[in-house]
Length: 149
Length: 309
Image 1 (cartoon, rainbow over the protein chains, first blue to last red):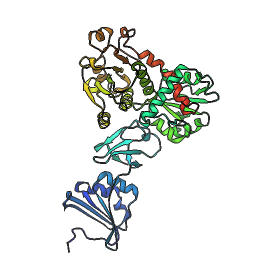
Image 2: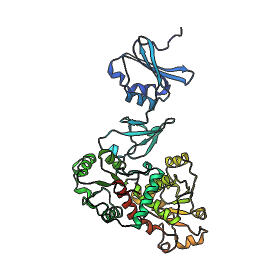
Image 3: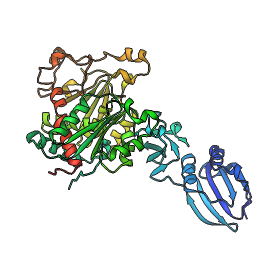
Image 4: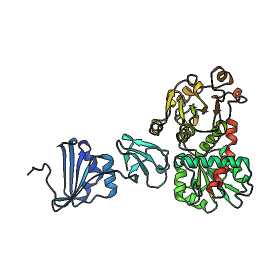
């Protein structure tokens, strides 16, 4: 049996195939440090697909759709594994929805979404590399322009 | 079958080629006929949070010529928005007073938010550097009238291509037909990269140039724009680029332009287009300004469901 570099969890979620350098970014958006749950983090693990990958295992955690959308933005190659009694009962890649609501800040300071109390709405124009168009001001953002809320 | 009843006019991106042609045909009908009672009993609210004389007067005139009424506020400073009321709340209140709203706002996306918030139609009369769709419809209408068709034209764009919302919207619309595009500007005022990428993805042939003279002989239409001082945060940058291009009768006649070459300009102009051009057969910019009336009549009638073709 293959030796696990990061120990198994009984129930919860495993976020695998994170681009290694994005591992802590993913961890930070999930607020796992505040929830008091068992969290195992591995970085720079060897991966056939990515070269080096990161992995986060969180006991008793079910991700919200908003969290999944954020992960898809930061780590588009990530896969989610739902673990029940040490078995992966569901495995799926993260994927961006057609529209991100309340997830990303519009980078245009002159956009109405930065002046009214409304959730931001960004249409996903392209998935790789990620390119988003603001529903309101129609400006396109990519790369470093994309800032999570 | 095109039906524009209750459709918001927010961005040229929201329109199919069929809808664009439908509006242009309706504008032609409006130019040929008068319908003094078509919008009788209907009320238009014009909400201009940014100064405008022509666009507002043109909408008001169009509404009145169709028998409708117009309400508006004297100046944005007189509204409850200065007391901190949200645009969303303000627009919900005004919805109760009118059948249709025309909105100009300095914040980009404000008309989209208004349209999402209320159920009566909203027409965007300009939102910051983003969109000014009714200007685009009247630009298209002017080109159609001058050239007889929008298909396969060679169209030049000159001036402020970076901040010029009318340029971005017209290029997007003409890509439907499709037209070949020539973008002529100072290097610091080039078309934004995302706009060019989008044109490329839509299969448009385009090129960028520093000099108008090198491509003038290839053009059917030139869309000339003012370099907008108000869009420059740094006055030094504005000084560097203003006056880069100056079109005049002498210049055009010295170039081998096509005999039926036409020049459009959304106006106002500063010094990029000399008055000597006004009486030449190339100039269609005053007809363009006049087209605002039939085009806006068509839009008002179509979205209020008062007329179908």
